[in-house]
Image (cartoon, rainbow, N blue to C red; front, side, top):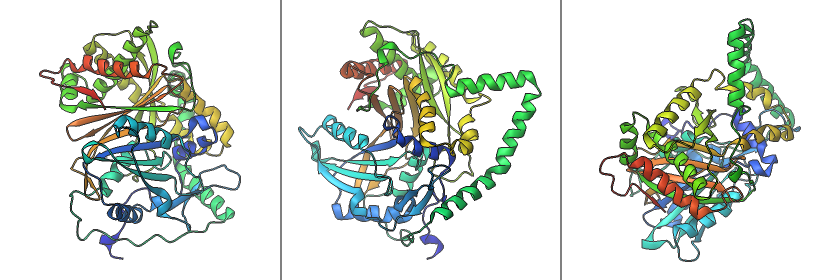
Length: 469
């Protein structure tokens, strides 16, 4: 193998990181399952043989897709990734036809069922489905992976490296060989865990030393403790009574937003695109509650904060949690964006912002039931929302152009999970909501359209700024 035939530098660590481990172990509680889904709209139906060949190549370029999780004999400590000797691409790839009228809403009904179906823990934790039968000869590609494999930024990095820049086959692509199967015994897994913890020991000791130093400075110690309570969700405001219900039933809906209009609206308020995005969501919740006769003034919101450094390996999860007490009573979109901007800035600079990553190595040694109790802290959130830049160039899959890319995250106890990926001129918004929390889904979808319309009204010359798919 030449250097040009090397696989991508993506998710090549032999063991899960701390946050990856927490997400994997959370599977013990069915309410905390962690698949993430990308739904790509393609301009045509790709040739099946070429589609399969593209995935076979992708599993050599990103060997993580040929690896399964091997846990320790006691289910504690960080699990290992090992090449599956029984890897079968046929199991992971499927094709089907959209039911009913072939609409995107019918497609989302099928996508919900796929997302809610648990991944087989004895196989590499991913699957992909190609849907045809959509209007105008279009197709949809659904990729589902366990969140333990990657966060949102890592997923976009992967897709950018695996999607083709042209419709025609690209000659001279790297052709790495198939990774060789691995056979790790229980003692080898435990040895890996201990070696990894020893490697992390200097960093852990640094954090302990900082904590001990802070303890000698009462004001700093109190500040860190308050921050830790905030980051953990212990001081979050109570959730909305209207959204109190929780279940294991997920529902999807999606929207297209003109990115230039969203950016212009943000600039008019001296805010960021992310502030405008969050403002549209919070305005939607205000409208939904008002229309149901149950207005609220504040709601708990969680956002991911990337702690990924330039020298961090790609793949895996490098995120922290930011907690917001969103002021739902603000109806002026400019004022709302400015309030969000201030809260997000505070959340990003919390002294304990990286709390779960600092505690992660120790938490990984807790048994799964204990981690389920810890994961239940996510249920205090009415909304979790993420915003990830999309692929910066035209992207093709087996000759079909990717026209849209909608992200759908899991529901780790929250009422609503929102994700936005910018693809070309469109900000693609994917919403996953708990069917027991959002009991009027059509009204909620209308409220999302109207909430974003309020924000986008600040953009000059906005034509059709948002539409439901």
